[in-house]
Length: 293
Ligand SMILES: [Zn+2]
Image (cartoon, rainbow, N blue to C red; front, side, top):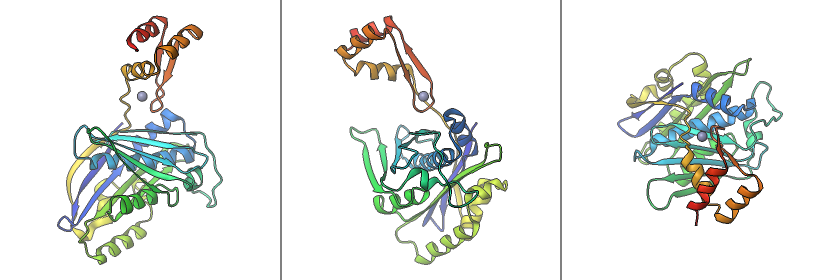
């Protein structure tokens, strides 16, 4: 099922915004990965932010990957988006459980940890990818993305991300926003936006109250005459295919492949992003050995 993302500008182009309700996307991610509540919240926040990063890309074949490694019990988290905001991701330990100091609030920072960094890898279709990273601030993911934007892209940004679970562990609501200010924007504007963000509380709370993206945008940037420039239908989507796994096997080399053929007689590879398995029987392995140097 798709989710909606809107983007645009406000205050005559001094502000740019992205607002998305990712409830369906996060529900799909949870179903695929069978994540615990805190892992669902952490992965949901990461997928939401990465999808927005995706639509920020300029070229239609560009891709962006966000990796968060904080040495917490959830392990390394990865999400990849294309330029239309379709996203996929996974976490190292999907079953992680952590105690929460605040009753009723999932301890995402405790699961992710803060002893590590956020890494953004942009594949812009050139020979090399652009990689930048920044130390984690809180492991709560929104603040970590905001720090990344400030220090690695020199763009002051407000990032709100949230996932609310229902009593039956379905996703009640999930979503997020990123608001960025151009360098010449008046300080007072940043102050007013900060105050409004504090006032509205969490973005997922607004979506849980059945507000749509446009209403959430109004709550965030109402006084600055926001103008929507583009709307996207985004989803959790894995584009894996057999050829990619054939290449991975070929890259092991002739000796290693012959060893697999002799010892196991077959190979089974699983996609981390969608859990689909790819089987390679004796015949398949023999032909891959012929292809490898
Ligand atoms: Zn896949």
